[in-house]
Image (cartoon, rainbow, N blue to C red; front, side, top):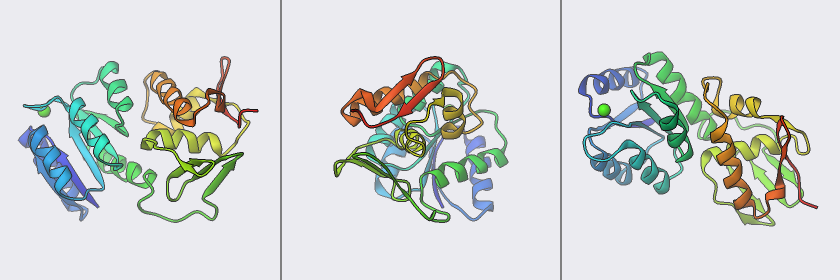
Length: 224
Ligand code: CA
């Protein structure tokens, strides 16, 4: 596992580096947003750990640019625990959000979880392709297409789509989707889910693909 850490606080950085190296992972470290983005572009990484309070760029901006440059998972680590920062970070494509101070064991668990969900390790399930009418979702390659045209999805958009495609036609509760896709660690509102659904509808080309089920949540089905 190759992890890039962008964090300007030297004591937090050295604690994180020690913990990750102790389990045998390679860690790259940069203390500013610009240096971090350069390092991100110049090498290949499995997971990005990103502090929001950086001396040069705002971490949210770093997350936005990092997301635009690749599909690796991003975990935001921040002292900023308020909901607007969380929602913004998650909407911009961060896969998880850890509020400081956090335990190193929890950090390792979160890194493993986003990495596993990104499909880059672990067992290959027997059947990985979900088909809902003209929509195909392959959970192994993490590609989704409609009538053969690949959809350009963020990792979280893919996760939401794959979650709904596992049981097409069934109504799924918002809270259950949040728990499954964003993990049990999420205690915020479901605003970020609504934002992902809105974006998915637009990428699917027809809002009727994802129907809102009143006071429950959402269901996926091919538009008639
Ligand atoms: Ca900082």
